[in-house]
Length: 386
Image 1 (cartoon, rainbow, N blue to C red):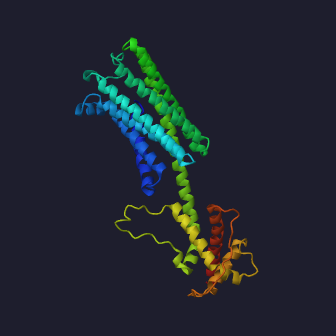
Image 2: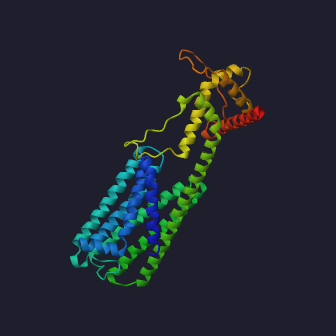
Image 3: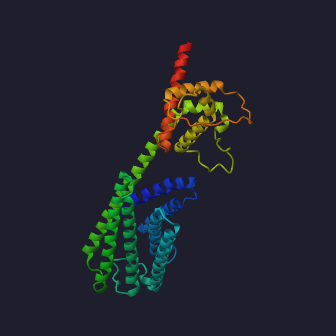
């Protein structure tokens, strides 16, 4: 197939990419299903290469390669639908129903295909859609059952893709819609193969033009699916890069405030785990995690310092004071704070630099304003000293 090698390359990249994510979150069921799906589809595409399929037949028995390809590829499509079902928000009971129905259907199809291959005479097990023996029930049933399952799996995956496209961000939604169109095209080719089996029942080897057009349609449908997957993956990469760059910048902007507060309260800093045998495979914190931790540490530091802030600025609304004023009060409060605080001293915390809404990004922007004012104040103080 025209798009087979690009699809194999793309699936391989997907396995490596999502495999890294799975290593970071090994208990994530959605990620496990996605990696399993990509791995099975990759294996199926590799087994569909004629040379590899023939090698399996030579190493085992004729027909084993065809059964192995269908078993692995169908399992990949089953995993794809379970991935979509697992991504849906709701009770686990709905996912378990999808798991039972999809795995039950897959097992029934594979048992039927193995049985029909076993019932086919050994000399004819290397059959294809072009075989002159299509009228033999085991051969016809092999293709009919297989393509009915492909029809179901492609339509189900396309329906899931459209469902998520309506809820997804703009670029990811476009990619999912393109993928759904490609999956619909693949479903049409499955219908056409069912029709071809019926037509060749009475006329073996006939309708070659119809078969050639269907292969061409299959190539185009696979190409459209590939474009949709690439578009969605590209959109996800761009979103991740932008998110990483934004959090890295915000983390840097928080540094003046964070350094000031953690110097006064070093116990607030979460230490990285020691590098040892049991931690060797554990990845370092991402920029998003570092950013989140830095915001928490800054906020914890302000909570600890807030009694002294309330003392030096008793007439100030610390929750809504301007950043420049808060920065000045922080410097004064740090000068008032004793080097060693008694554990028996009871200090009442007050709210400081409260954001307009409760999300993390808004909290970070509020703290960044104070951090920048603190840095500006220290620079001005340094200039005055010179």
